Image 1: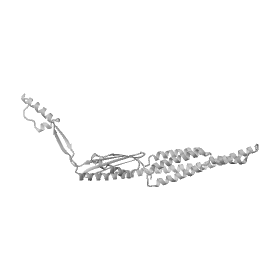
Image 2 (image 1 turned 120 degrees about the vertical axis):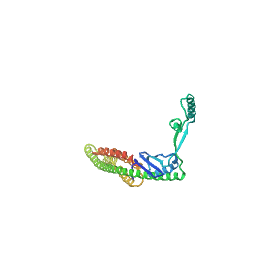
Image 3 (image 1 turned 60 degrees about the horizontal axis):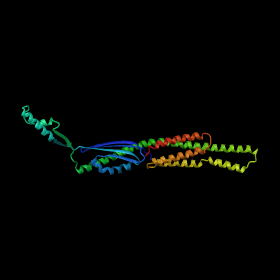
Image 4 (image 1 turned 45 degrees about the vertical axis):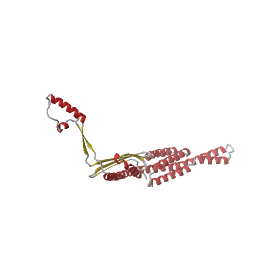
Length: 297
């Protein structure tokens, strides 16, 4: 199956207990490279998440971020700065002795002094049952995000396949035209050789058997039937891989290397008008296919 390695998905689920947000980005990579960002309190589910992603994604760099916000109200901590309070009380005593101030400090006075009190939120501990429930919901939400990611990658894969199928058909047609041009070139070469022999025969006593053998050898050196058969087999194998349910990006990349090798050999062996032009066009399309295949899972 031709499926893109790139994609994006974002899913948020919330209820009266918590808000769960999942973001997944998938990029090209030779292997499966999974990067997880999970709250420390839920690090225990990382191995399960890796297995879940591995069932959906065979290749690519996957960046998965899980964010959890509990609805449980936080506790409050108030800390009194004793050193500041002591220093303040001493300063006030001196001021009272001079008659500059009167009366004692009030709570309102302390609240107006930012150095006196430190007020911070304290996250209340989550009981084990709630933590397990939230972990289960997070796992489910990640599964939904992976399904959305898979849909996007499949949709892009369909576009990739359409482009690759069009180029594969074009390359196959170019190679068939190379075969026709090569046959015509070989026939023309044989005719030129026979004509040259007839010209020499008038002046020299030529060994017709040796001449015939040389013609056969030259024709064999320009024969591309084996390369043509292998190229056709590669095209057939390509179609089988693309129709299979398994990821095929690496195999298609290897097939393109083999197809390119056969085309190069045809270009070095075949003789005839337009052979070079057709070979160059085929190699250009194969290179475009190779670039596209780098996006296939």
